[in-house]
Length: 284
Image 1 (spheres, rainbow, N blue to C red):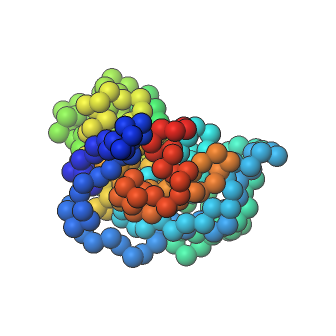
Image 2: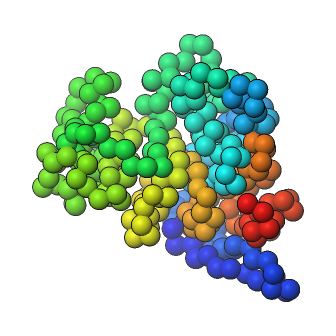
């Protein structure tokens, strides 16, 4: 939905505003919405010690679409995102109850290998984090770890093209990834994430550390990525969520999923008053 235009709609008293979209479903560049579920949460609760971060969340995330997670700071968005590929396993005091289903299986079943899971569910973080290696080695890193035995250079090129970076770096693949600009570094991290051929890409505020021009390139890239991958993105930027996502989930304080629906519905006519209050800036 990269062509979606957003505007501010002023209420009759002039005191509130509600972000709306003016692009109908049929104008979406992608094909008709998939009816298949890529990731599903079932009665999901997450705790850090005695503190509950996610409260009884149940939702189905469609494949090959962009789903945005929005809400105020500390509401559990990033915790939910990291629960999908078990990144929270790295936090000793984290406890997960309920199911997260991927590929017809609960990812928290004892026989699930978290490393193998993360090959199928890649992640891009808020701050670009390329390795202190060449551009080529950054992209090839995951391939080598998993014993990829085909043409690595061809896969590196394919991944850089998929991240809309190849034309900018094709003559400097042996240069350090740390020499790239911030926006290029983030696209390099996206190339690294898609190199192992995942099914889902998680993005935790991937443009918050970038300037507007670099952020716009990432937004355009996200739209392209959804042709092949399921994209789930955490963002504090509600205009961004309205521009790029097909579905939006609104989390509020206490880790509660308050509303989850088509993005246009969330921003134009939410069911919950609390959601409208958040979007219009009455709290946040």
